[in-house]
Image (cartoon, rainbow, N blue to C red; front, side, top):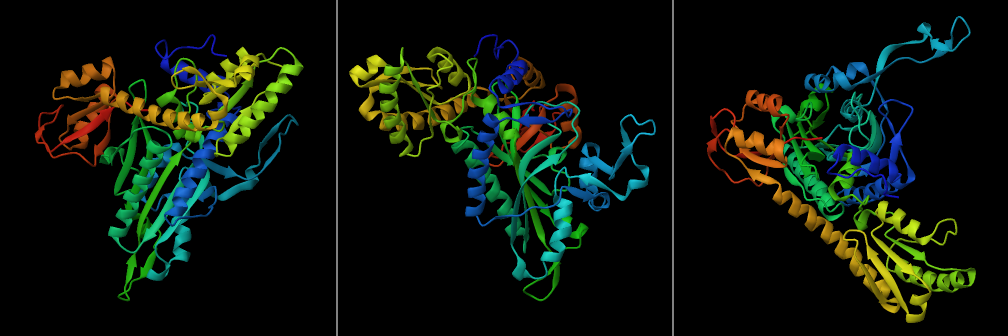
Length: 491
């Protein structure tokens, strides 16, 4: 399966694209910039979705669904919001087609032009806050904790499967609160939830912090984010949680009667993660042998491959293999028994290694005689012969160890590629040499941030929440700085 497969060192971007396609995760569609998520890829997204959905509900959130189409006039109500998304919007202008005059093809029916053009949602703040105006009258209606699972469209010119596509899948939370304090607590709670999911389920260590004003979500007062480091030294924004203040409440006139019998605008948050997490998962762990998936998110955690010469041997092996499968399933482990006679065992080994199945078990005639089984782990490619009678407990332990090992490996990589820098020359040299996270002083001005971006393509990925105060001089301007921020080139 992995033959003619580009290595990370040869061309990281090509390695990624080939891996996504050859591992049957996704492919480009007939619509420019859009993707088809294939069953192998969608199964991982479904698992992510189910875990996150449970986490949201455990923290008091409920799901709803809002329209795909948003009246164009809604966007003009929040100035920063419309400015931030205007260039990415897809617009519906007509609702009908008709046959071309020459009878060849179809054309837009200009008599069917919409009275008001509709935006295909790039994000749902405007349509949701227009709805909330009808839902919120009193403090008794608060907090309102709503999430929706949906697709969105942001018209991208340069796309890459999962990482940046014109249409993608995501969840977006939109909450309304009585006080600023409650809204800020919600923003930080969701940030912690996202970080916990990334680290405990995706096995990806993340930095938590604030975005700079230049990188802030359009219409937000503050944007909190988690940032992960990919194997090519570039950062990837893995989730954002926005404190919206009262901006959207004022734009859509969403007021409530307070406990003191006064009218006040509500306080708001919004937050989301998308199928971009699939790209993060692939780039953080996979190798030159193919995909590597953390066991907690693998659709198939274990595959059993029989090795046989004839039907009699297969029948004997199948009886034992199915017993092992049942024992593993009793522990909540997802298992596939691949007894296809259309492919040889070696081909199957290569296939499952390339597609990232965490554990592979091989069972042949000699194993039947010795009551043993071969266990191979995807993360280290190590193989061992183990007693078949205790294999369920052994596999359970190995899956836990793989999950921990992937996180430990990713954390070690991040630490090895995080650098404190005090000079502009060192800043540029590290970026060009190996990338990674660069902790450097910044004078706090948008002008300096923009100049750094123009000269190096590096941006402020995060202003760390846990940063210690440290006075210094800005790495670019030499002006006073109160602390270090994290720069990197990013996806």
